[in-house]
Amino acid sequence: MLSIAHLGKTFEDGTRALSDVSLEVGKGEFVVVLGPSGSGKTTLLRCINGLVTPSTGTVELEGRRVAKDSLRQVRGRIGMIFQDFNLVGNLTALNNVLTGVLDRTATMASLLYLFNKEHKLWALECLDRVGILAKAYTRADRLSGGQQQRVGIARAIIKKPAVLLADEPVASLDPLIAFNILSLLKDINRTHGITVVCNLHQVDFALRFADRIVGLAGGGIVMDRPTDEVDEGYIQDIYRGHDQGLFFGPGADQARPEEDLRFTA
Ligand SMILES: Nc1ncnc2c1ncn2[C@@H]1O[C@H](COP(=O)(O)OP(=O)(O)O)[C@@H](O)[C@H]1O
Ligand SMILES: [Mg+2]
Image (cartoon, rainbow, N blue to C red; front, side):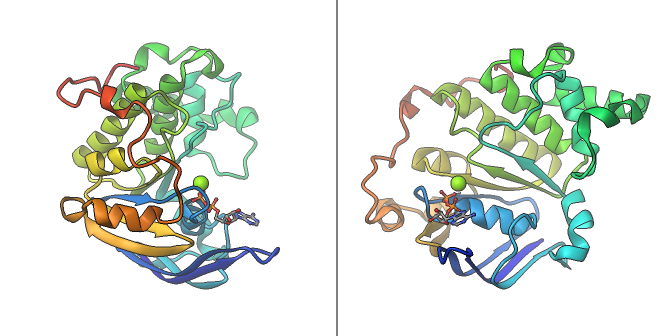
């Protein structure tokens, strides 16, 4: 459903962020792109949603080439989830979710009056899906980090996307909350068949949640394997030259996979 061929990106200042990246992602897969800081993960996601124009190569989503004249349709099929949530602080959780159905170019707050009852009921449904219906009328800036990311996920799924692109969605969260948020993403992936491409730098989370891990280093793919075939040696390849102590994310052993914590924020 997502087809990336020979993708390269060199920025204006000469920084080469990606080179010859080719990747096929099937419908319903949960793919983690794992790599150290600066390896090109964000640039890769931004090439998929058209925020960055590749220097070479192509991206196709559901058979449609991502290009200037297809951006509207392409973005209609993509839900984005961000590290810093990117919510509008002075809007309620509900209104933040509703902004997910707006065109990027629209002035969000000024257009909220356009939403009809069906939109609002569906947005409430999405908040319920991510476990924070009770916070629908709370301002986003009054929510905890975990709750804000739940709103971010509700905003991403409101348009029923084919794929969720998550750029380090738990990097700003405590380990246990991070675990819960990734569990929620996995559950949405499984239940609704929505494909997920998720950038992470924590190895333990990648091993726990991914169907498949793509290792990125220096802008190139250095590993692409089903998670159950990934061992320590491959992981070391990804982080070679990056002695950042990232093999096992801080406090990850505090996460409790056996408990159902999905709807605790
Ligand atoms: N707009 C930009 N202009 C110049 N260099 C950039 C830009 N965005 C990212 N880079 C560089 O591209 C490389 C990859 O960055 P990025 O995709 O953000 O990596 P990651 O998300 O894995 O940390 C880094 O060297 C970064 O400094
Ligand atoms: Mg990044």
